[in-house]
Amino acid sequence: MRVLKLLSLILAVVLSGCGVGDVSISISPREATVNANSQLQLSAHVGNAGNKTVIWTATGGSVDATGLFTAPQLPGILYVVATSQADSRRTDTATITVVAPLVVTPSSVSVVPNGIQVFSAVVTATGDSNVTWSIQEGALGGTITSAGVYTAPATSGTFHIVATSVANPSQSGISVVTVGV
Image (cartoon, rainbow, N blue to C red; front, side, top):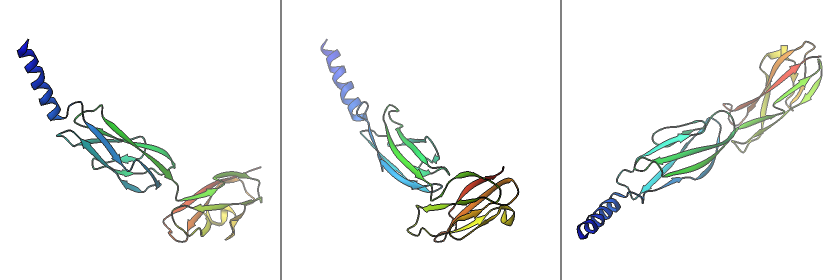
């Protein structure tokens, strides 16, 4: 009986020294807002374990082995999970809100031939909300003024209104216009 108690005590000391059962993990940042298609570096701290390695997973976008998260193109709320390799029961989660750097309103609309539609754009990525308006299909898709007032062509079709950020021309948003009777 005494030997059994001694072995139990030794096992408890060995296991606590290994961190078994006491493994903790914390992710940073726990919450973040990022633009679509942008990156965010996450980190994870594993406590009470000799093995500090984590396995990263994401519900959208992607995350590499170093915790570098790449946001998807579409906005939404995603979760990045860090799992301790020392004890896979130990995880921590970051909530990532992905926002579009430039949103065109309405995002899709139906217009009658020669009809008029007013568009607006919100630029979330910069302090400058100025945009330039264009039609992807050129003059065949109608006309649009610098104020976002669109006049549909006389012919039916599907056209794309594009708002491009003046401050950062690599950021744009699109609205799909269906012209029909």
